[in-house]
Amino acid sequence: LSISLLLSVILRPYEDPVLLKLEAFSMTTLLLTLNLGLLYFWEIPVWGQLALAGILFSMLIGTMVVFAKFITTEFINKVVNLVMDPEPKHPIIEKFRRRVRDRFMAYFEDKNIRNQIMKELAEERAREED
Image 1 (cartoon, rainbow, N blue to C red):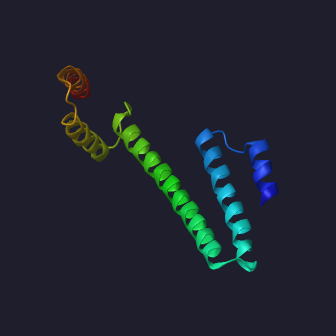
Image 2: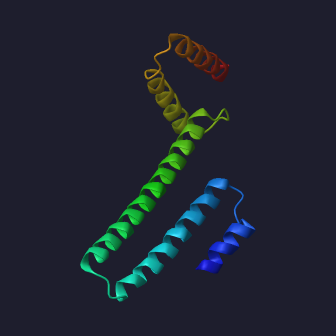
Image 3: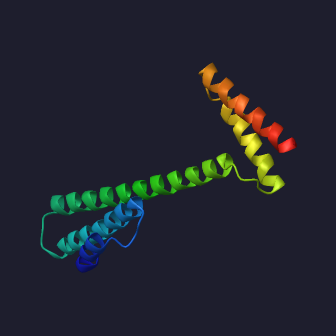
Protein backbone atom coordinates (compact mmCIF):
# COMPACT_ATOMS: atom_id res chain seq x y z
CA LEU A 1 0.00 0.00 0.00
CA SER A 2 2.89 2.36 0.73
CA ILE A 3 4.42 1.58 -2.65
CA SER A 4 1.06 2.16 -4.36
CA LEU A 5 0.72 5.53 -2.65
CA LEU A 6 4.26 6.50 -3.61
CA LEU A 7 3.77 5.44 -7.25
CA SER A 8 0.45 7.23 -7.42
CA VAL A 9 2.00 10.47 -6.21
CA ILE A 10 4.97 10.15 -8.59
CA LEU A 11 3.21 8.89 -11.74
CA ARG A 12 -0.01 10.93 -11.36
CA PRO A 13 -2.33 8.49 -13.17
CA TYR A 14 -5.22 10.97 -13.53
CA GLU A 15 -5.34 14.25 -15.39
CA ASP A 16 -7.93 15.72 -13.04
CA PRO A 17 -6.20 17.19 -9.95
CA VAL A 18 -9.29 16.50 -7.83
CA LEU A 19 -9.03 12.79 -8.59
CA LEU A 20 -5.32 12.81 -7.78
CA LYS A 21 -5.98 14.40 -4.40
CA LEU A 22 -8.85 12.06 -3.72
CA GLU A 23 -6.78 8.96 -4.51
CA ALA A 24 -3.83 10.15 -2.41
CA PHE A 25 -6.16 11.02 0.47
CA SER A 26 -7.92 7.65 0.37
CA MET A 27 -4.66 5.69 0.18
CA THR A 28 -3.18 7.71 3.03
CA THR A 29 -6.27 7.03 5.15
CA LEU A 30 -6.04 3.31 4.39
CA LEU A 31 -2.35 3.24 5.22
CA LEU A 32 -2.83 5.07 8.51
CA THR A 33 -5.83 2.93 9.46
CA LEU A 34 -3.93 -0.30 8.84
CA ASN A 35 -0.81 0.85 10.67
CA LEU A 36 -2.66 2.34 13.63
CA GLY A 37 -4.82 -0.79 13.80
CA LEU A 38 -1.66 -2.79 14.47
CA LEU A 39 -1.31 -0.92 17.76
CA TYR A 40 -4.32 -2.85 19.09
CA PHE A 41 -2.10 -5.93 19.31
CA TRP A 42 0.33 -4.19 21.65
CA GLU A 43 -0.23 -4.12 25.35
CA ILE A 44 -1.35 -0.54 25.92
CA PRO A 45 -3.54 0.85 28.70
CA VAL A 46 -7.28 1.20 28.22
CA TRP A 47 -7.06 4.98 27.84
CA GLY A 48 -4.57 4.43 24.99
CA GLN A 49 -6.92 2.03 23.28
CA LEU A 50 -9.78 4.50 23.63
CA ALA A 51 -7.62 7.31 22.26
CA LEU A 52 -6.58 5.09 19.34
CA ALA A 53 -10.22 4.19 18.64
CA GLY A 54 -11.13 7.88 18.72
CA ILE A 55 -8.35 8.76 16.29
CA LEU A 56 -9.30 5.98 13.89
CA PHE A 57 -12.99 6.82 14.11
CA SER A 58 -12.38 10.53 13.43
CA MET A 59 -10.10 9.71 10.48
CA LEU A 60 -12.73 7.48 8.91
CA ILE A 61 -15.52 10.01 9.51
CA GLY A 62 -13.30 12.70 7.94
CA THR A 63 -12.71 10.49 4.93
CA MET A 64 -16.42 9.92 4.51
CA VAL A 65 -17.05 13.68 4.70
CA VAL A 66 -14.41 14.35 2.04
CA PHE A 67 -15.89 11.70 -0.26
CA ALA A 68 -19.42 13.02 0.31
CA LYS A 69 -18.24 16.54 -0.54
CA PHE A 70 -16.57 15.24 -3.70
CA ILE A 71 -19.66 13.32 -4.83
CA THR A 72 -21.96 16.25 -4.06
CA THR A 73 -19.72 18.71 -5.91
CA GLU A 74 -19.49 16.45 -8.95
CA PHE A 75 -23.26 15.94 -8.97
CA ILE A 76 -23.93 19.68 -8.75
CA ASN A 77 -21.41 20.35 -11.53
CA LYS A 78 -23.11 17.77 -13.77
CA VAL A 79 -26.55 19.29 -13.14
CA VAL A 80 -25.27 22.83 -13.74
CA ASN A 81 -23.57 21.72 -16.97
CA LEU A 82 -26.76 20.01 -18.09
CA VAL A 83 -28.85 23.08 -17.33
CA MET A 84 -26.46 25.66 -18.74
CA ASP A 85 -25.35 23.69 -21.82
CA PRO A 86 -26.20 25.77 -24.92
CA GLU A 87 -26.49 22.71 -27.20
CA PRO A 88 -30.05 21.65 -28.07
CA LYS A 89 -31.13 18.51 -26.25
CA HIS A 90 -34.11 16.24 -26.03
CA PRO A 91 -37.41 18.14 -25.42
CA ILE A 92 -37.79 16.66 -21.93
CA ILE A 93 -34.29 17.86 -20.99
CA GLU A 94 -35.09 21.29 -22.44
CA LYS A 95 -38.22 21.49 -20.29
CA PHE A 96 -36.19 20.47 -17.24
CA ARG A 97 -33.55 23.08 -18.05
CA ARG A 98 -36.14 25.85 -18.29
CA ARG A 99 -37.79 24.88 -15.01
CA VAL A 100 -34.47 24.71 -13.17
CA ARG A 101 -33.32 28.04 -14.58
CA ASP A 102 -36.60 29.75 -13.72
CA ARG A 103 -36.47 28.45 -10.15
CA PHE A 104 -32.79 29.30 -9.91
CA MET A 105 -33.64 32.91 -10.70
CA ALA A 106 -35.74 33.18 -7.56
CA TYR A 107 -32.59 32.84 -5.46
CA PHE A 108 -30.87 35.87 -6.96
CA GLU A 109 -31.27 38.91 -4.78
CA ASP A 110 -29.46 41.32 -7.05
CA LYS A 111 -32.08 42.65 -9.48
CA ASN A 112 -29.44 43.58 -12.07
CA ILE A 113 -28.18 40.02 -12.28
CA ARG A 114 -31.72 38.64 -12.33
CA ASN A 115 -32.76 41.05 -15.10
CA GLN A 116 -29.67 40.24 -17.16
CA ILE A 117 -30.24 36.48 -16.87
CA MET A 118 -33.96 36.83 -17.63
CA LYS A 119 -33.09 38.89 -20.72
CA GLU A 120 -30.65 36.18 -21.87
CA LEU A 121 -33.29 33.50 -21.28
CA ALA A 122 -35.88 35.45 -23.27
CA GLU A 123 -33.40 35.89 -26.13
CA GLU A 124 -32.58 32.17 -26.05
CA ARG A 125 -36.25 31.21 -26.13
CA ALA A 126 -36.84 33.60 -29.03
CA ARG A 127 -33.95 31.97 -30.93
CA GLU A 128 -35.35 28.52 -30.20
CA GLU A 129 -38.76 29.48 -31.53
CA ASP A 130 -37.27 30.79 -34.81
